[in-house]
Image 1: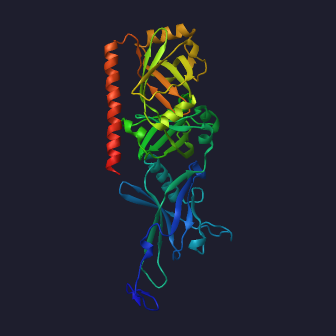
Image 2: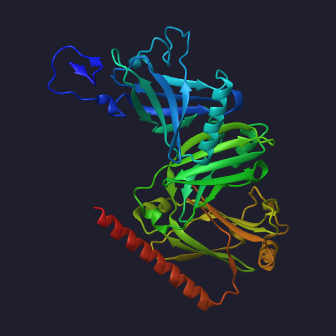
Image 3: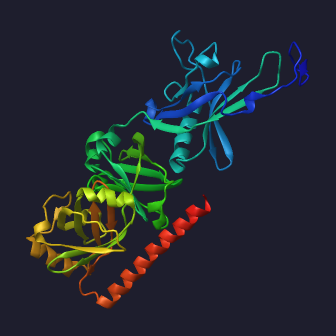
Length: 426
């Protein structure tokens, strides 16, 4: 039998199937591991090969920008040790476990292409990446192509992410990688700036800060493009993928890391802060779910930092109070808790406003109106929430009641809409 007037195959057939068009057929769990560190950078594609007939292929790593696929050729290691399991000659598909492209071993042209790949990858962390093979079968001049898409991405370096000991906290309008950010001062000498990108619910969120600023924060903060309260009761939320790029003063990239974090959903839709000369009161709007009731039934120790930022520089922040208490939790539309001097501690990464509790409280209330930005941070092992708005107790009670009523109704509507949506998809 003669196929395509080129490939002669002995025998007779009742059915002919071209299995090579199945792009997922020739590998299982293809992944990309990479290092981004100047001349030691590399791209490594690995997976479990399946039984496919492939002869002397040309190998490419391909990535998509807009609608265009860009290709970078990968050369075999030649000569290669007999026990080498990477791409080598002669090519045996079932024995080839990975395909590696080293920056240092590449020509100047390929090095430029690798740099371009990383530039595009920084812009779009979700861009499509795939392994491509071009080859012809014996007796044929017809070129065949097979592709396998990358399903998982990891980095060679993980030192900073490991030292952060962080978790991903999700609220309706923010995403926070909460942890010990002072680790950035230790994990890579020479870092001047930290670029961060977080992928959550298929959206990319970016942050760029000087090392001295981010190291003094309690978490890497991403403000989401739109507020979405229903995410807190959405059973289909994705993991958070965090990319961290450490950069020198001159713009040279020292290291890039990627880590997957489980999304920890906040148990509060919102909170309000009311500060007086004598105490600080918070009004919480809880997520009324069995998960949150169970979490907060274990006497969760919670910290609240009450901060004023006099100028636009975040380094000007002054802590007026740090409260520590066991967070109450009530399955109601909202509840209120008030904190006084006996709840305070002096433990904070920010500089303290001078004086004792009454003096710091008076200073906060008196300077609130002229401050560039007030900041209230609430965090524990289950939540990390913040607000740039707070009010003193000169608020008229009528306005407060109206605001509470509006927020409570909004929460009920969110729950109702979510339930309807879930039922429609059942």
